[in-house]
Image 1 (cartoon, rainbow, N blue to C red):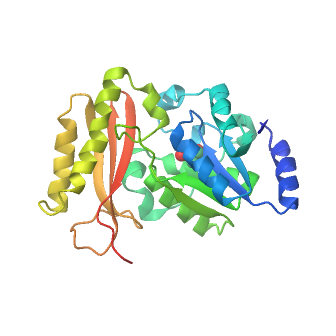
Image 2 (cartoon, rainbow, N blue to C red):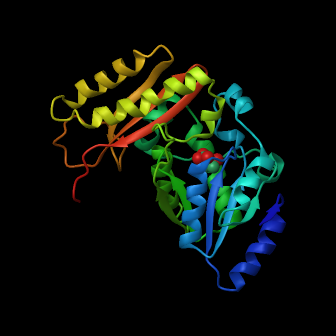
Length: 284
Ligand code: PAF
């Protein structure tokens, strides 16, 4: 596995791999890797010939400076983890390499970015779009792999690719969970022991909610989820919404002919966790 920090080195290696006709798989990350990331890398290895992982904590997607400061970073640990996976090349640039000058681009994702994460983290998806666009330009992958845990991010990146007609296929990958059900996240490592024990209440509540669609309306169920999570002294729900899986707009009735996803953001002390669960899927 090679590790590079300059775009020029990245391009030299990738040009050579591409000249041999290899397809490039790309897994963008912000480091603090966990088995969820590793599952993306392994999937990339199954679907492409040469796998690139980027490790870059992107400042433009943090609307909260404290969150950026707190974000866990351990490059050596990440490299050790990646060493035994399908990853062949790690791109770990400094901020100045990615942003030699401020990125002033403004993207417009319409209704996709005015709900949930977009509503509660203003500017977040613009920053994600900026960095993903830059990284796609640098790596020029055939396929890029994104986790379904960041469901809204995945939909926005698909929209970005469509808007800019980028020649890359976006491959969604299943959420990986801890043994007790907590969705894996780099932020989990910031939880103290008590917070970690109680954080499992989020996924447990979502699972229970999935069995209640016959006894409650959408509105009642949303209220039930929030009340139940907030009943735990360690947790405070920021939002829980049941939305359709394409336009991300709140659904009003279980009868609507759309796939429904329940998306949640919860504060556990200073740590913000997100998760989601698919409700009844329809045949489209
Ligand atoms: O999902 C993430 O880790 C980040 O948002 C991404 C896609 C690597 C962009 O910085």
